[in-house]
Length: 235
Figure 1 (cartoon, rainbow, N blue to C red):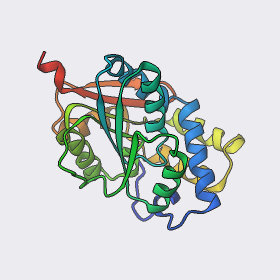
Figure 2: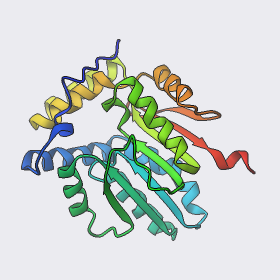
Figure 3: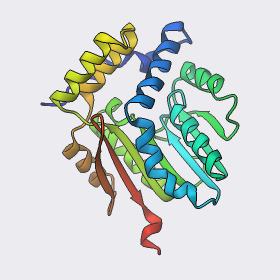
């Protein structure tokens, strides 16, 4: 199954110009999908050992969307008594507005409207992550994003995304036909299944971005994770 990516046919959420009920419903649906189908669990399973140490952690989230994954991380960190700060970067202004509104109870999260491919505030973060973003990008920009994750961390980099397959595509078509049926969610989810990188392709992207000694795992519900811990080499 060949990756189907055309910049002239973007996901609708990527070109939204205003806060609309349609966009708000779509972002709520994405949070529901992320919570029910493994996106939150994958990130929390990887980061929880770090949070258990109890030392302050400063995270950078590139392409944060509505910020549901940073909120899940902060909630877990609170339970574990770990001080955490998250700088969450998102390019789309309407999405930032919605994210800030939904994160009012999470002062640990700071939202920044910026291009994730060029963002640099002069800080080296303990963890730099990007979740469910790679499939929005053509190959050269996907490599640039992975490279930024490596360049901006002093500790670890985490990238998670969908994993392309015919079975995954069939599952997403069924899910958006039966349950998540709003037009924007249906359009974007189905397009995402065609744009996702395969497991082998994601590994090649990481190598091209200068990642080394990284851990690459297949995750449930047709997802995958890339994790590189620089601190492990210093111990």
